[in-house]
Image (tube, rainbow, N blue to C red; front, side, top):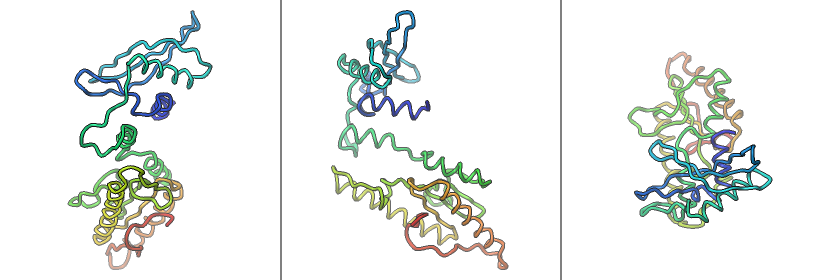
Length: 254
């Protein structure tokens, strides 16, 4: 079981990421997990609450559980831990964009880089023999980072999250703070379009991939684009120019 799978299992059992909080003495929170241990001599299962604070792991006995499945035992252990006051809901700090502990937990869990779609695309590109740089600025003086960059061919690839970049197929508007989140997503889209234009004006080819798209198909199209760029690089005038692309935000599959 991977680390991501284990975390998802704990979230389901606890009722959400934000419900796994252990309040520390200085007002901070640590995110806890439940460990189940089977004592073979007694055939009893004991549950322990585990969390880390400043690199030190702490553990607290919760109680015995006796359900048939692991999932049910984890859920029972979280109920016991909550009833005994060992865990609480993580509170939303003043000034946070989140409107609830649940939404803040989702926002905190959102990764800025090395997301699963990014890793899948990079693996597909690597299997095709392509080599690239990860998470760098295509233009040193432009504060915009691309997920995959081919410096020699001047190709920048962005893997866009469906929610944060307003995917027309999967984006679902927020039900709370509607105006704020509308402006937030709109701002991201405006920034994307601006980034596209700046890079294209500098002779770069910009490719955007939605997180829901097939990474193998995306990798194939990136490979084809790179081949076209290599053909242009080897052109008689020696100049590097960008192939024609629709203005604004361009996504593979659009």
